[in-house]
Image (cartoon, rainbow, N blue to C red; front, top):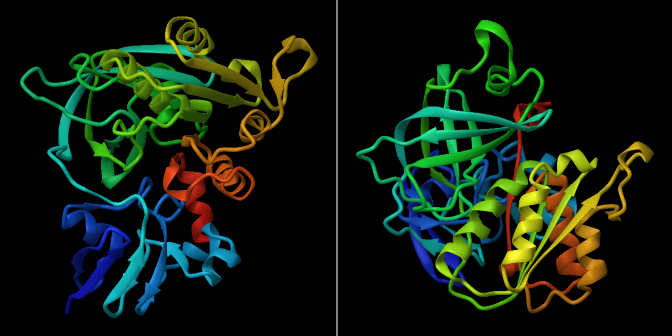
Length: 348
């Protein structure tokens, strides 16, 4: 038995089969709702149920505050409809010619710009044309069905390579291999398999609003893709990049961001460190990175925001930018990075 699902305000519609969650059903119908992790940890797919019966799934209560749930919000990647439904999403779009594919890639280079950050350069097959939007991610396909997701840091169409930024998660199935030593360590020329592109976090090129790019840690990766894409295409919009880390060393591409600020008209870069120590000699902004945005821009009503990093940072920015800064909810685009530890917490 299938159920008819209507998405407002765009008035798109699709069918969900028995046992199929709303996000998967929408994607199968060529309707792209906001999403990232697809497992209930990041809350990127949060939306409102206007009418209809459904099973919410176990992750919702741990990922959303009780006030949101009481107001009708849920996670579309977790919801299984039990009747026809009307749902609300302000960032819905129709799928285009961007095709999700599985491809082999070869590791061509590995860099370590920080002790716990690696940059991988992956060679795509010479005969394949891999299309993606600036800001999207790919899944690394591992044994036993395990996947690890990483944003593409390179700009679309620039070369036959993809650049990924990885932070080491001790005990992580994939990052221990990348950062390991001896026989278990990743080697140049190693073959990996990827699937992508994935996600609804990408640069919207059609508007002319000024942009805040907000990131923490390796959330810099999709920002790099967006900025380099804008520069390559000659897109001229005011951009303010706020990059947060605990220590200055976490801003592993600080020199690149400063170079953008010098070379790109209308671009400014504001690094923010939350836990600087005396030995760091840090002279810049301190505190939470999203708070720095509101200090500089108390009125965000005319801006677009692209936020990428930890779930806590992304959700704090979403809440405060809308409640205190007047940002329209349809102008907040996000990708919250989750890891295996985050997913395990949802099972507790």
